[in-house]
Image (cartoon, rainbow over the protein chains, first blue to last red):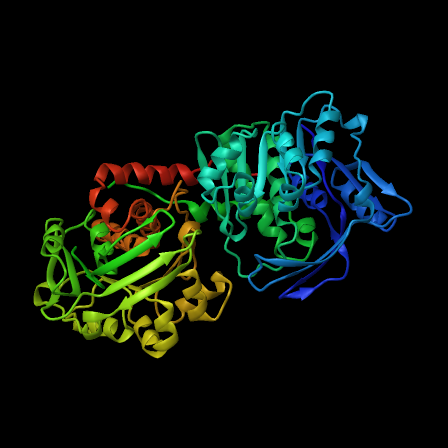
Length: 307
Length: 307
């Protein structure tokens, strides 16, 4: 029931209305792996870092059951670096710096020891690379989840469409779903996207929650109303990690269980945004997660009597 | 268990990406009364119209148990008229025309026959008039629900603050909640607003659902994901009508029952937006409502097992 996570491990420098950080550890695969490791281990990581990525950080991940055999360390280049500034509403941000560094050469190889992995989380990357990862598995994983972003929809749409035919779950935000489908209505967007390949579509709406669609059903999960969203960076990747973590733990990829997995993902994301970077994610316990999930139950639970 | 509804009865001319209308019947009290009349009757209407308001429309309302003794007909003036155009995302609109007409003289009197009303819905109006209506009741209604808008927050905030101390439920949209409280976080906004008087706050977020707060609890109700939102006009008032209708029917104003009432309100609003004006609201049956409410149950229902 191992999970393979593909994505970035990187440095971020973040400015929010609540403060700013120097370079801290970030990256889609970092957040996803930390979140997923609460549910199953090992998490098999595929990524690339530079000489400047701290050894202690790799050890911290390994101590949580995150296998780093698939993390290439490039001795003469720096790690991927992103810097951004969030606006007051926390829903929009400006990218200040994007230094690709090692990411420009990222050509992942799936280690032999990762073969047989049943769950594959493809973080946001060049679609051609996502495809290459899928093709390297001798046996297709039981469930493949794909993330992408507006940049690839605009610059590599044909490649992206090909990858869509190879995956089970597409996980994007509302504007990306609209962009892929050309439909403003998310219901119509979902129909079109489900016709492009994936059996399931998850539309992330940030503070407005998330929607899960398959051919005949829709499910809505709220975001937990928080006093402060301290730093939204990584919330989507953390959501993805919690989602696939729960599915791998339960070995059940039905629509019904995906509903629960989305609540678990939302709970994990609600921790992520409480502090800068991965700080909060590293300290939450299983008890914290259970308590938080119960808050979601309370948040949406109601009794109904018919009219 | 009668409900008194105070608000506008008016003409609207609406343009949406799906089409445009000539003058059709609108107004906050119209939508609220139509929605509420599915749950209890009579609905006691307080409003003002001009000579041009169709007699058949009043009769149609009366045939649904909406009492119009408190609707003043001004013989030499026109009814309130609003014209607006929705943008593609349906969340924003431009007001093209606002002709106050009779509304400029609205000074409502609560008819003697309305005394003893247990539920009072105060639609969006000048706060001083909302206050005057409350004061005319010999016995305070069991539950008073208040709607307002940015215009009054900006131009009559002191009056509005006074009214807030006199009501039980404030029902506003997210930007109004932020404006009243000066807080961006809706959780913080809720705390401040609940300190200003009302015991309950409902924050309407349009297609993103609604939140219910009291001092110690929060509940989230989604909006139903629809293929097309045809015309959002009146959705908030319809929501209010369904909400107070369910509470009056069940005679239970606990937080727990308000959660159900919000789902009912959301279901009614989901009908409202399917056609122009009140058209869809007039044709829905109890069976339609039950079916729609069950869709909400399916939309948010999940099983949870702890980590």
